[in-house]
Length: 552
Image (cartoon, rainbow, N blue to C red; front, side, top):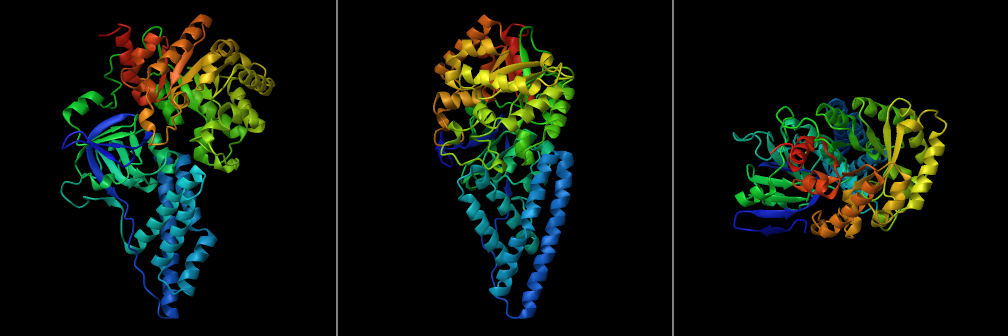
């Protein structure tokens, strides 16, 4: 359970949270304080002159913070990406919203309160309203409002967020350390040397928050939702993060470290296998052009899963056909002639698009998402298809339909796709169509579905969720999210056997494909194409080579 601990001996403590970025890492901890301003100074203004002075202080601090956000946005656009830089521009616009400004100034003038108190009161009220909304995406925007409040108060009080041990001789500012914080703020990420950070552990922050998106962009193992962990961890304490399971070990003993064997980044120049063993493929999962460039640089066999929805989420708007074409075409060119598998817009569940104003659902994980969403939004579906069709005029690509439930749905998807792309002579010959096997009903119709398409791909994250009735973002049941369960492997074998009978390529993507020991089992099952995060490709390739006897 999140926030609770299990003590396996008098030294080691185990915490359970939610994974926001996969992978395992071990190292020492650095604690980061965000200056929460739990006790904001409050005093009354005695005359009109003091009121005027407070209003001037507010205007000055707002201008200074606006300039600071512009600088940060510019730096982020260069170091991480343009979409991530928009996070800080959004915060700037919220801070300078006329309604927000009027509310703060009215409190200063009408209630004769100092500006610190007015800022804290107004932004805290907004933060509370957002935190209580039903929409998960909007609920997690509360953290952005809190970030604005802290920035203004820090500037007014000349306080700075930073490492708890800052100024002490042993402080190394997070270099080669695991950062432990109350919340992973975008500003925090920018103000440290990301090249030397090992991972993140936070007390709160959702899997679709802006900060979580940045954490996944930079690729560090990260776990959130461990309430109160800062009360247990001291700077320099040994930690082990299992970003696959959402578990964090404080003061892990040698047995734990040996059993979990943290996955370290691999120097691609030192690996034994720079190409995949004959008869196998190690592909890359990608969400950004940077992911594609990394995959290309380490010799991935292609992109097995390009998550097209991430660009929509990061841009916080509905992308036009031309915007999509430019982005997809750049990805196809970056992989140097190898095939990119573009998954069609897969939204809903833990990936909402709030700007579409979709009707609230009681259970979005079982609602209008995946293939259902695509067929229910023909304008959005057609625009994405046309953009990909234009890419196919010059590149061989794969189009992957998410979360299909049966053969009839696949027929509808293909009919729509061929109609949308049919106006582009020559595009169809460069396109292969496939489906994601994520829902148990699709496995039961594997013969019919595979007969309709060119290839199949197993989406292991959602498959485990639907197979065992587990909300994988709910820490109360996350212990049952088990990729070792024999029922799952029976289902994978059933699908692999059918794909072999029809001579249709079958791959698997999702976090389990990159777990140590899983590639060997997948090959034994008959699934020889694995798509994993780029940084895991060398290790997975080596394991596959060992399993087929290429290396010892």
